[in-house]
Image (cartoon, rainbow, N blue to C red; front, side, top):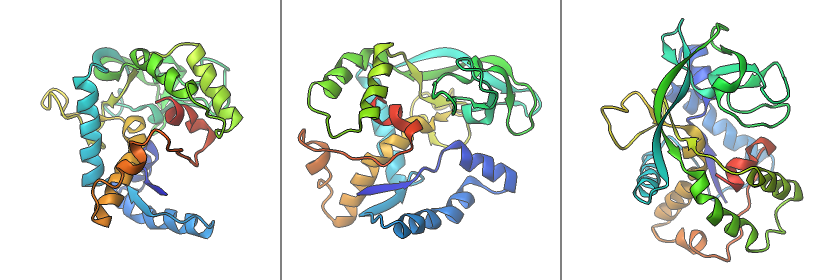
Length: 263
C-alpha cells in the first residue's frame, strides 16, 4: 500500500504565491498532516512518500525517455494561455472560465467540475487568470505530447481483454465512453518553473517542465521502487508491477478516473 503527496499540482503553486512561500515550504507544511489524516481514517501505508524526491524525478525522467525512444511521444506547437499582466504562460489550473460543453461559469482550465468534460484551457469561453482575474490571451508554444491514439489498441486490449469486474461499474462505463470517442494526443509538458525538468533539448525547454498529470500517476510506480529500495531489496517492486495477475486498487476522487484507467 503506497502513496504520497502530489507535489507538482497547481494548488501547491497557487498557495505558495498567495502566501509568499516557495513550493517546497508548502509541501513541508502539509505533507505530515496528509499522512496523519489518512491514519486517523484507519488507512495504513507501507510507504507514504512524495513526488518531490530524487527517486521520483529519476523514475519520471526514465519513463519520459523510454516513451520517446519507442515513438510514443511527439513534439507539436499548441495554443497556450498567456497572462499579459504577469508576463508569463499560465498552466491549466491557473485559468478558469465558462465550460465549452455545459456552460458552467466557474470551470477549471483543464476539466469542468460540473459535467466532468476534459479539455485544453484555450477552449474555455472567456478564460481569465485565477491570480488576478484578468483576461488571458492565446499564444503559440511548443510541447511534447503523449500519443494516446497510437496506444489506444493496446489500451483496449489491456482494459477489456481480461475480466475487470473488480472495478466499480461507473469506472468501467466512464472509461468505455472515453474510448468510444477515440483518444487524441495530450501535452505532457507545460511552460512552468516548478516540476520535473524536461530531460531533452534542455536549453530550448529550460523554461518548461513535465506536467503534473503525467508525473503524478507515475508516483505509484516510483513509490513502489522507493519502498523496495528502503527494504534493501531493490527488485522487490517487480513482484507486483511485472506480474500480469496483479490486481491494483486505487482510492481516488471520481474526477481522476481517466488519469488512472487510461492515462
